[in-house]
Image (tube, rainbow, N blue to C red; front, side, top):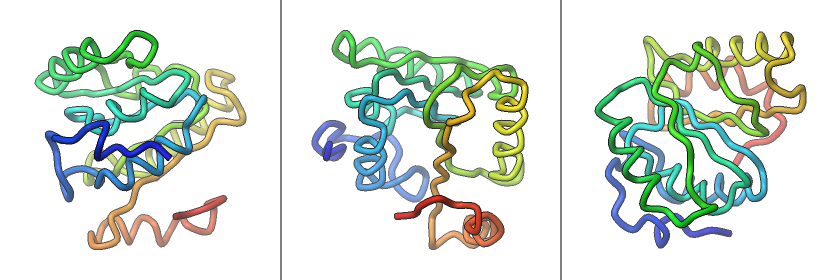
Length: 159
């Protein structure tokens, strides 16, 4: 399993602002040789690790201040192990991928809304029918737990 703490030893965003590196490590292992799209990448601590094991990786970020950092960070990675940066709202079109991931940021970025959008894109044939949504949940954050309680019955797996 990739060790994101070793691959990205000095993350810009730490928990609870972003997922702990242990979570990034699990996800990096899961996306080995798959394509991944991360929505709301922020400074890209996870993406800098995911790109090392994924077949392809795309960071979708709406905030221009993070986009500049992501572009610089992507350029620092080895050829063939980097990621693409899309500086736009995810609703403005997503590339096709095996896995889509994010961490809910209410009130404007909610799990249910993202899942609904992904389903619409599948129904239109814009993303593959086999695409997976991997939600990240902070079990110490009340709003994450509330969202998870309404969605967990649809989960194929959880860690």
